Length: 626
Image 1 (spheres, one colour):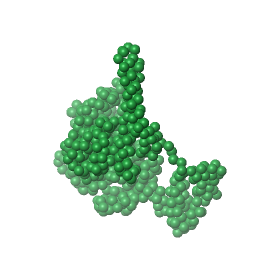
Image 2 (cartoon, helix red, strand yellow; image 1 turned 60 degrees about the vertical axis):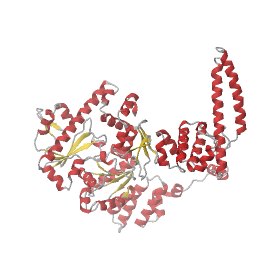
Image 3 (cartoon, helix red, strand yellow; image 1 turned 90 degrees about the vertical axis):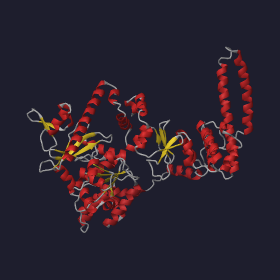
Image 4 (cartoon, one colour; image 1 turned 180 degrees about the horizontal axis):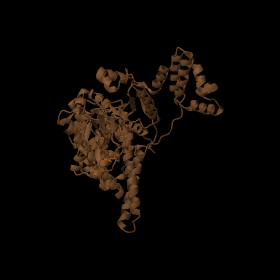
C-alpha cells in the first residue's frame, strides 16, 4: 500500500506531525516520567496505561497492546487505511502529496482532484451560510423535522437559494474555472450550450463528506413540489455514489464494542438517529446497496444492521442488500419497524430507547427471510404450508454449517408442523443420512485408530529457538516483579550486566532502583520509568507463566540457564573473532598471539559450560537447549 509514496516522504509526513499533539486531540495526556500517559482510546480502562513517547514518536498501550507510530494511530482511531491516513496527516502539515506521485499523468490527475475538493468545500460553505443568513424555507424545514442548531452544524447542512445561477456566479467570482465547476456536478450545461445553471435550487443541502474529511458531493431535498424529491451530485472524478456511505465520516468512530453499523436509506434517517444518540449509522445515497458498499462495511465493522423503511419497497431492498452483504462475509441483522415508518419517523415518535430495543430484537438473515415467507403464506391451508416449507428450504439448503442448518430445519419443522425427517428428505433426497453422518471406510478407521491409541502419549519434540535466552530473561524479570523476596534472591546472584537483551537489561536496572524506594512494584507506575520499546517488552513479561511449584528451585534453574546462555553466547562471539583473525594472521604477527589467547579462552569457556550442565530445563517443555 505504501508503494505509492517513497519511504522518505512517509518519514517526512510522520516527522512533521508530532504524535503527542495528534494523540492529544483524542486523549487527555499528562507528562509522566520520560513519557506521556493517558486513558487508552482503543479500550475501556479506568487506570491510564496508554503511553506516548515524544522522543521516539511512538505510542503503546500496556493494557490492550496497541502500538505504533503517528500514522498507525490515525489509521486505528479514524478507521482509515494507510494511504488515507497518510493523506490526512500530509494535508494537516501542508504537504501536497500530488507533487510526489510517480508520473506527470498521476500528478495532473491529483492536482485536478484537489481543485474539485476545494470547489466543493467552497460550495458547502456557501450553502451553510445561506441556511443561517435569514429565516428561509430551508431552516424552517429542518426545524420542523426537529433538528437542533448543533446537529445542523455537525452535519454542515445548507440551503440552495431558488435562483438559477447564484452558486455558479459565486464560484466564478472566487476564481474557479467554469470547466472545473461543471466537472463537480454543481452546475448543469444549458441545452443550447450557451451557459450553465445551478443543479441545486430551493433545496435543503446535505454535504457528503469522505472519511478523510473532504466534501466529495451533495444531496438536495426539494422544498416545493419539484421532482425528483431527492437529488444527488452526478458521478465525478471524486464522487461515486455506489462506493460512498453517507455519515461514515462520523459513524466510523462510534462503532462501539460490538463493531456494529446501522444502515438506513435516507439522509434525515442518519441525522435524526445521530441526534437521538444512535451515532453508528450510515445511509446509501438513494441507490441500492452495492458490492462496493458491502466491502466498505466489511472493512469498518463486524455486524451490519439494516433499518430500511418497512414498506414493500423497503423490504425488497432489504433482501437484496442482505444477500450482497452475505456474499462478502458480513454478519447481518434486520430491524423490523412497525406501521410502515422510516427510522426518522419512528425515533421521533417512540424515542431512542424504543429504537435501541428494536436493535436488540433485530433478526439474523435466515430468520428474517423465513419470517417474511411465513407472513406471505397462510399456514392454515395446505397450499400455504407447502409453499412456506418449500421456499424456506431454498434458504436453508445453501447453509454450509451442518449445525446451523440443523437448527433451522428444527425451526422450520416447529413452525410448519412438518416432521424433521420429512424436511431433511426434501433437502437431501434419499441420501439424508449420508449427508449428515460421518462416512465410514477402512482408511478412516485406520487413521482414527492410530490417533486414539497414541494421542495422549505422543508429544511433539520442540527445540528452543536460537534466542531462547530471551524467554529465560523474561521469566527472571517476571519473578522480580512478583515480589521483593524473589527479587532479592535473584539480585544476590546476578546484576544487569548478566542479561543479554538490552531492553530487559534496562528493565532490570529500573527494578533495582524501584525496590530501593518501595517494597512492592506497581506496574502502571513502573512503566513511567521505561522507554516505549521497554513498555512493549513489559507487556510480554506480564503474560509469562512460570510452571514450577518450588520457587527456590525455579530461581536456581533460571539463573543457571541464564549463565548457560551467557557462556554459550560468549563462545559464539569468540569463535567469530577467531575466524576473523585467522583470515589476516599472516598479515600481522600479533594476530597469531591473539588467536592463541582466544583458543585458551575458548577452552575455559567450554569447561565452564560443561560445569553448568548441558541438560538445562527447557521452559517450553523440552529437556535441552541444544
